[in-house]
Length: 169
Image (tube, rainbow, N blue to C red; front, side, top):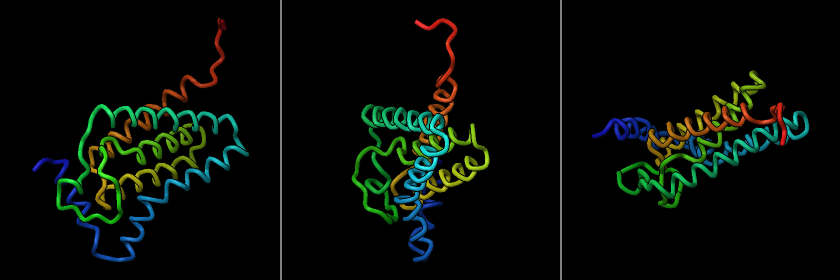
């Protein structure tokens, strides 16, 4: 068995043992991403420049993930393994995790400018990624790819956004 599958089963075996924990994992996997929406509403009111950067980063991340999913189809764990599935999900491509990529894109971008808020959002993004494994809809490699895409897009967006150009056209 591959390391990816071994790690998947290690975390997925946490599912189905405690209803309270299962509820927490389901919340994290399906609904915690909306906490980022609330943060974005806050940024829209308090830091419009960061709101625009974070929104652009999230949009670019969604496009990149969609393209990768179209090019590289990998079946979801529940479609080929005896996974413990806590949430329903269509059997589309698993790689990379869009939830994780968007969460890390937003969290890391915010972290670059607002460390105290960003560190909490990075922790939440990590829990979202982990929850996608525990609930049976992603492999660890999907989560890792989502983390890398989200952070890279966020770094590039941060670097190239709102820079003053010496020679404008």
